[in-house]
Length: 564
Image (cartoon, rainbow, N blue to C red; front, side, top):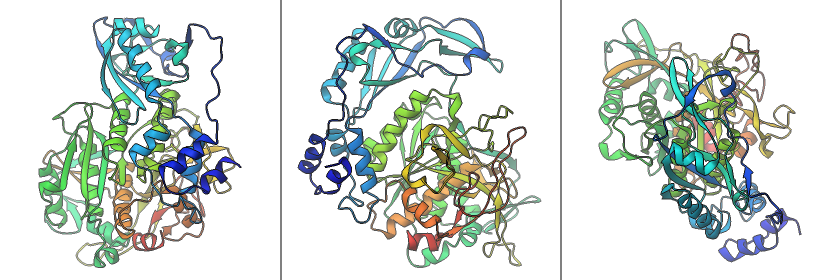
């Protein structure tokens, strides 16, 4: 009996999946003879050889580490993930609980505890452990970390600033080599970037107008996009995301006063403070974030009945975001929609980190969560280095996340300046898109996207261009904003509505169904003009069907919701 057949024939209980796991040997025996220490590869930054080293890092500097652990029984997990999106399977939309995931696919408690003991034995402080056992948070001085991992942590100059980074891949005891998959926190060179641009404007000349005029500039407000993307039939039928929760995975916090001012200008009802929740997995911060504020404003505007949860990191380090992601899957499993507008070019971060994060995204998917991420604002040149090599953005490149690109939207207007409907779109030149260098092609893309054996990005798109731009109210000031940061939370808002329509239990990784609908353009505006060439980096051209600029295109919200 094959693994897939074994999984398909299981019933819904714990005993059934335990039997499926028992039928499949998924861990290869560890080699009997191994050296005392082994190197954990793919942990140094590609940019290091191009940077000026300026000596050793301060020996007393404290580093916050995130140690990633490997999944167990991963072939069985992959089979269940496929079956959850097969309507003929008894596993269809049967989501796992966090306890089930931990019991069947997390590292064993024995392996996890072995990692904790080893960290402590090397003089490091374990600051947090997690019920899914996929990460362990630890802390220690540069001197202790260097001694524990056999690395040199040096200072490097980039753009007039000094950073620190490890000059070698870490080394581990051989018995931990199959358990530990990544170690983050050895550098502060690689940080996620918000996919947002904004220009300040004077206060609006009038309030409550859906098509907003800030001085001489006309902006898109929420009611414009409700009309353009056909949300109003959903609202009229009582579907606005009520009873659903949208998590924003982000760095830095937001003020409700900004959200309320945004609503006032846009002619939306004022949200009570109780609509919002704040979580700080890496320590509280009062630092405001324009990205966080924009995400909350626009996710909330497209799903006005949904609760909004800010899951907020204290900085933009990779290790911080890994902790934020893990908090969402372990502590907020009933939150069925997640949006993040932070990303980084794949070639600017260690691949081991991306693979550890992808394990967390797998847990999110198998638990029924739908995650959306901005695809980047530098077109095919995601690294923004004016080179000729195409790159894509992570986490949008994860197969378990819906990567959202950008378009330029046109709308017809009535005599008051309000948008009255959809007027067409072209690809925005800044829309991140291309081929992943890290992840293979997922099944939902096979035979549909280019025959490149790799994950292609983006999956879908939405308005994100600078003309006319969108309203943002941040720290009491009004802005014209643009970027794929706008597109991702708006897609999250629609999926809160879709979840409401389908009973609120979640739809998991949205891509499988989106690709099925995309093949017939059901619920999509197919964007067929434009490209994402950026300077010397030759991009891709939008065309009929799927393309690596706009994916399947933007949504007709009502049609997609009733078809999903």
